[in-house]
Length: 87
Image (cartoon, rainbow, N blue to C red; front, side, top):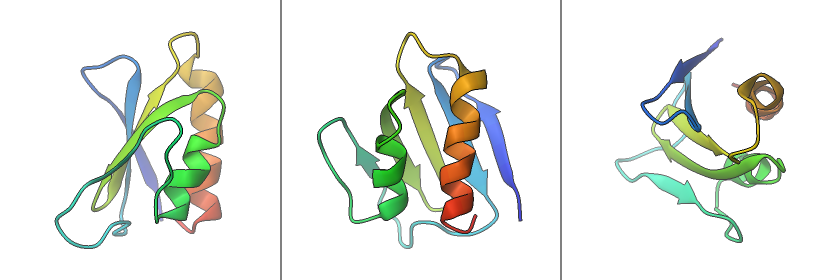
């Protein structure tokens, strides 16, 4: 199993794609600051201090970071959450 990390047109967002389905169906899931989700992986990502918001659809989650955060500091924390949830 692996997680592919891809840049997006937004330098404050990175796309984390798995080879497993995370979200069933055709609805997307997003969590903004102060909100929670029925998906524990999304809630765990939002617990990371440097994460601003998250968006997920089928087999990927896009993580938006705080403006003053560097990806080399944040990515390992995000990957740790994916691993915790079996991805």
